[in-house]
Amino acid sequence: MSGLYVAAGGGGDPIGTLVAARALTGDPSAPGRQPLIATYAWERPEVDPTSSPLGARDFDGLVYEGRGAGDSGDGREGGDGRGGRGGGFAAFTPATRARPPAGSTMPALAGDLPARLLLLDPSRGLSGLARQIATMAAAAGGGIRIVDIGGDILTHGDEPGLCSPFGDALTLAACHLTGIPTTVHIAGPGLDGEIGEGPLLERLATSRPLVPDRRATAAAARALAWHPSEASALWAAALHGVRGTVRTVNHVIPLTEVSPRLYPLPLHEAIAHNPVARALLDERPATLEAAAGLSHRLTGIPGLESERARPPRREPPAGGTALLDRDLTVKTLREAADGAGHITLRHAARTLGLNWTDIPALRTLLATDTPLLRVS
Image (tube, rainbow, N blue to C red; front, side, top):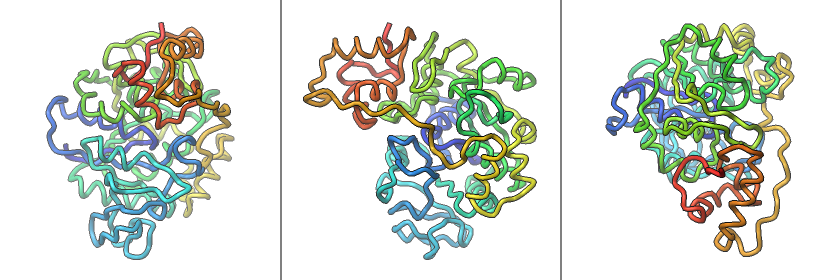
């Protein structure tokens, strides 16, 4: 699997990116060489209460690779701690740990995904991020493939459902600055709930999609069993033939015959759609904060706010997840689905007042091994 894969938005995007990588090799069932997947450590608030993407200073136990990179083992490269010094980059291992109060699913994903997960650390601004990506791509031995689950990377900046345009725009601009041939891949148009399937299909009208084999999801099965990702879970479910409506934390999203598709388009076409990416390339902000401020001015959405206000967490039922009543749980989730046929594991946990770490226990209770919970 030559070339660097970039999970555009962080969070659960490395899961969908691995599925895309398997599909793009043309042999989804073969393990092959582990792909290099670069990702932000930028999580949902139930995972990480901080409001910005985590950098090297926020982790212990990162491993440094690339030119001039030494392994300090303590989240600092060459005493700098920001990544990129000496042309190196940081990789996650299962032993990596986020420094409290920060939290991250990346170390666990490093253990459960057959891929090498690399940290995108934007703390040095756009140019510093571009240098990191260029070094990673050199190590991967090929071009760059950006993977975005849902398609909000093609935002025009004014869609009513848009809530997180900054990270994707930063990725586009940084990859452009590398000068390395780059393709953008949109997986599951509309599945992130930010831009509808219809508008995205208009923007992808000249692209010839690939429909991945469902076997491509097998490599991500262990991660999907516990991760609170919604968009990657929706795409995996669509690849397995699930159709109909799904209740997520913020939306009811339809799974259609379009949902399994993976659309490629050239980098310049994606940038032509994205006004934040174009402005970043015009202004070249030197810091992450300046780049986020630019995005805020253009879209009205704070660039470093991980998620809009979320509903309060309910208290878990007495006795904890091990003693939940299955019939009552199913009834509660069916009501929370608002008429949808499926519900995401993330929304199910919230509805029941559970933590995202309780997802495996919930799956055991309901005797399910699918990416979504069927409630009707």
